[in-house]
Amino acid sequence: MRLVLLGPPGAGKGTQAVLVTKHFGISHISTGEMMRSAVSSGSELGKKLKSYLDKGELVPDGLVIDLMRNRLNQKDCKNGFLLDGFPRTVDQAAALTGLLEELGLKLSAVVDIDVAEDVLLERIKLRGQASGRSDDTREVASNRLNVYRSQTAPVSQYYKNSVGIAVVDGLGTVEEVNKRIVAALNNTK
Ligand code: AMP
Image (cartoon, rainbow, N blue to C red; front, side, top):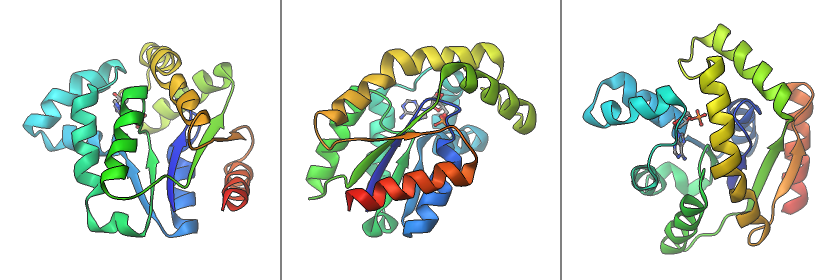
């Protein structure tokens, strides 16, 4: 099973990604996690990435696509994977289609977690207080939502016109949302 999980910042993608990958026994690939660990390693790549993450801006497509090309060629992706936080632009989505074609693969499904904006801002603020994530302050959170609206929301349209997309209501408890996602995926099998 090869999945893409879409949704605005604060929709619960990371939490749901962990549950869904456990449920289906597939690899969890989070570009945000990959980038945060590059930043904390202090590598040259990490230094380049830090300013984008701190401002809530997207890292340039070329960099992210290179990271993803390497990641998808790793062994653990053979049993399937869920992409969390990628693609975030239509160009990344088109590049992913190309990368998968090179590997003779196609996506099985795309899930979009839908949550209203006022709820998102409140959730990101609470997460920032709890986790100390440096991109969860109010200004950065609202910038990340703007970036999402202008650059990432069109990715849903890209998939509506190709693979198809399952929109899941992201309001409710973690378990409720998880049940909806699993049900939607079982329906697309
Ligand atoms: P996330 O944990 O998925 O919310 O990602 C945290 C931050 O990492 C984002 O605000 C971006 O700065 C960067 N990032 C993660 N994934 C991508 C991507 N696919 N394209 C560009 N930037 C990304």
